[in-house]
Amino acid sequence: MKKLTTLLLSIITISIFIGCNNKKQQKTLTRSTETLESNAAKDSTIYGTMIDGGMNSLTLLTDKGDTVEYLINPNDTTEVVKGGKLNGDRFAIISYTEYGDRFIRSAINITSLLGCWTSLDKNFEIKEGGTVISNIQSETTPWTSWKIFNGKLILSKDTFEISQLEPYTLSLENANGIFVYKRSK
Image (cartoon, rainbow, N blue to C red; front, side, top):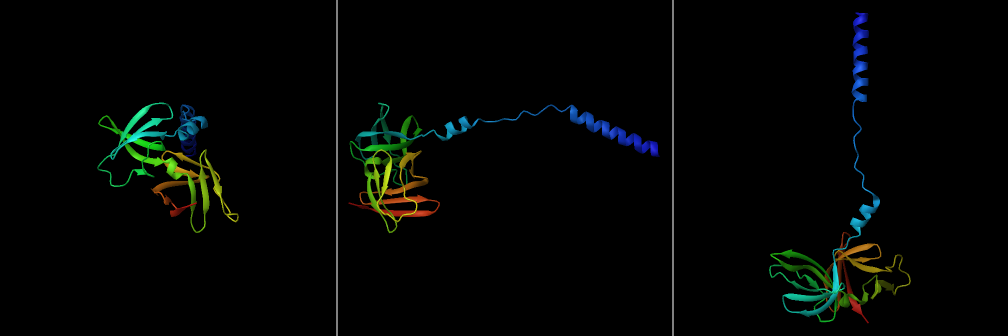
């Protein structure tokens, strides 16, 4: 009986040893941090100046020099152009292609976005070139920079969806709520 137990333990030990040694090393897939950063850094927004537009279209002279016509889908239930349309204004557009035509998913009138905005706890000016100036001295974390990235407004480290941009009203939305500002002079 003692020999049988020793024999079984020996067989189990040998089979475990053989089983572990015969396994091929598994290849692990690793992505370089450069690849991840470059994918995250891809901005799908098209920037340019509006050169023509109608009720259901907007023609943009892009920063790359291309002239592109974007259509507004009549079936959209929300306003896709934020800030109005005026020839000569700068725009940031996110689009999609359907049936060979380019449609606007989101368009932000950058010219309308620039200026002084105020609420109960914030008073800031969005300036051309990506700077934001806070006009309240006691503000603990003032915004200092801005940019449009993938159709969203980034103020310093805060990312917002622009839900409304009109001549005197700016509504920004993120996970913390909806923030409404009025234009000041």
